[in-house]
Image 1 (tube, helix red, strand yellow):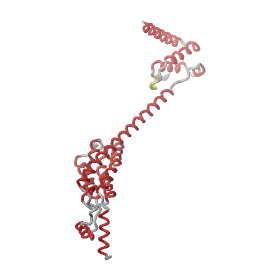
Image 2 (cartoon, helix red, strand yellow):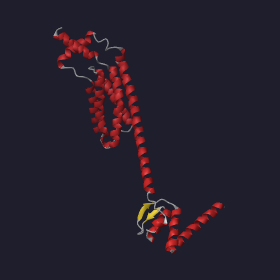
Image 3 (cartoon, rainbow, N blue to C red):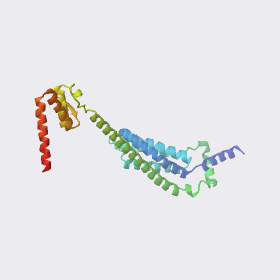
Image 4 (cartoon, rainbow, N blue to C red):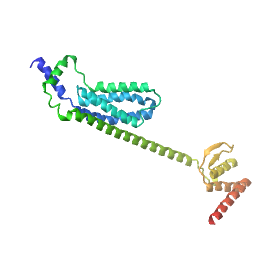
Length: 283
């Protein structure tokens, strides 16, 4: 076999390996992680979200190049269709516009992304092999490659439909996951706040109350009654768990063990108010 014939066979082998349909399916599958990456980047810092216009173009081009292994212009068209589909999903998901860049910057990023998608998608033909590639194309030896499944009427609509659907599904999944994490974080914060709130409770047995000054005991009695805690100097310390029974317990202790007239007066008013409410409820 001559050098020319050997080179011709090598070129033919490369062209036969081309698969526009595989490129369409591959880039559609890649659109899921691409749109998830876009949403993630935007959620972390929306100002750098528009940079994904370029990054997604590069990734789309790589997906078409890896799965299609093609030299024809159709691979660039496949890549552009997939790229535009991802852009449309990103725009509808509101992860494209950050509100901090001018329209000209968006146009530039979009142009770079489109060029990257189209350029990377196709393998380049070595300059010395251009003539051989043209001869093989014109010879009719690529019947397998030219099957209906690789025809543009099948491949291009398939690219548009599959990429749009899968990237949209990826966006829905990403937003659902983010919502789940947000709710989970909210629940954890609420549980933490509730635990922190409950930790404010103090023992109301005689032994513990004996360690408190009268002013401090009064502050806790008021805190349990009103739900607002002021220390003995009158400085507000935040919300406090409301528990009328514990408030009355502290006041009774001050009356019985400290003979505190103010505690007796307050306790009497509280009990009278509670009896009045009970009588109103009976009517």
